[in-house]
Length: 70
Image (cartoon, helix red, strand yellow):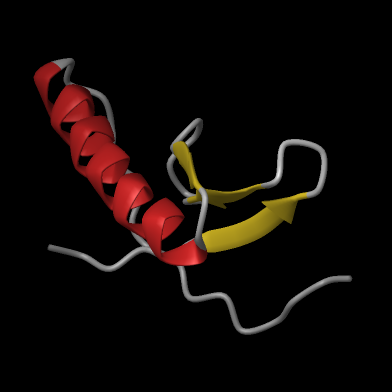
């Protein structure tokens, strides 16, 4: 399977880590730890791709992010 970049951010309001995959619109998950958020977003990624295949939708190729904007 192709490798997607995962963005993990801490949400100070809800006190959770939120993980997302930028290439896959709406592909997000959360957890109490970074590791939990990462595990959960990988499950969601697989479901996202499976659903896209079932519906005949395009699946974006992974991107390599070399720069971080602050």
